[in-house]
Length: 391
Ligand code: ADP
Image 1 (spheres, rainbow, N blue to C red):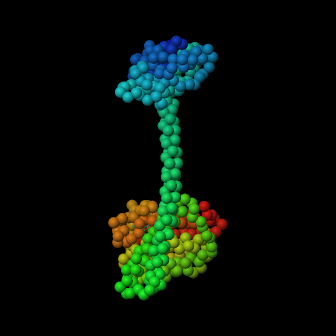
Image 2 (cartoon, rainbow, N blue to C red):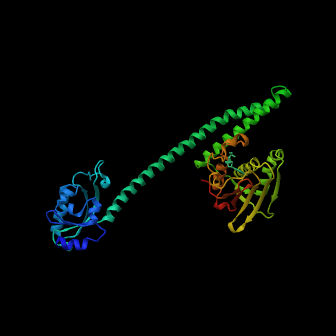
Image 3 (tube, rainbow, N blue to C red):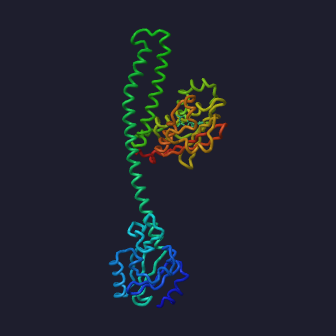
């Protein structure tokens, strides 16, 4: 094949191609190869393959010899660069050395002595070159991702362990404070005057709040580390919700809110962890009351036989949540308006715990809300205990 014949074929091809003599002299190169190396085909013509390819001369020699001798097609890689020798093609991905203007390429070669005439060969495939780079980059990204994931998992495990240890350490003295304050209020240590009762009650209320918070943190770390056991028993959801309501009645009456009930009569018993689900209702109910100043709360239950479960919704006429905030409210420590904490209390743990418990119980939770009008939290719980497995 003459250089002219070669160029007639190679000219219009999108793949970089060059024709090389048995001694390694470049007889012709097409435009695509020039573009690939940031030069013109003419500038490459007449150069030795050893000058343009940055791979070791022995490697190039071996390619040329093996091809000439065996007459078989060979596949291998050579690094090319232009202008010759100015570029460090040995770097991974054949990167262009800093400060140089040329281009470099690590290219897969297909050596076809038979097809092109003995000892004339070399097909440089631009797409494969791009692919080679892509694979290198992807492999590096995957390795980085794997490393980062295992680092994050380890950090998360340490955090959960730390939270769990701290919570245990805090609970012991807190229980002592609560115990002694209760004993003082019960006048076990002697009469308590009216002037002392109010500050003591306030101290006990605050210690109660603190204990609840510590318990929440402990719960969360237990759930997160997969150490939260489930105690599955038959549960009558209607009476459980009613119990929660009775416990909160004082709080509801204080804000003059009305509570409406919309309960389905023939609701099946479900197999569930009663304490965990009580915790979910307490959180959802107290949020509904906390964020509602006028109107009230409607509680509805519905049988969903087609999904083998039941649905409970807690709807309020409160401040509502903006649509852009909705996806984030189940995140740990997320509060729509942290400055409102002083007004409403809480630290943004409640819904994160709710979500984890519901998940643990193989249930679902959804929220719909209209800013300024109110929110509805809808909970689905499965009936079948067989589906529930403690981690
Ligand atoms: P917090 O302890 O701060 O109440 P939660 O995790 O229970 O934490 O709730 C996270 C945030 O979601 C709250 O700070 C509040 O901004 C918003 N939120 C939760 N429930 C309601 C609701 N019923 N109405 C309006 N906003 C709510």
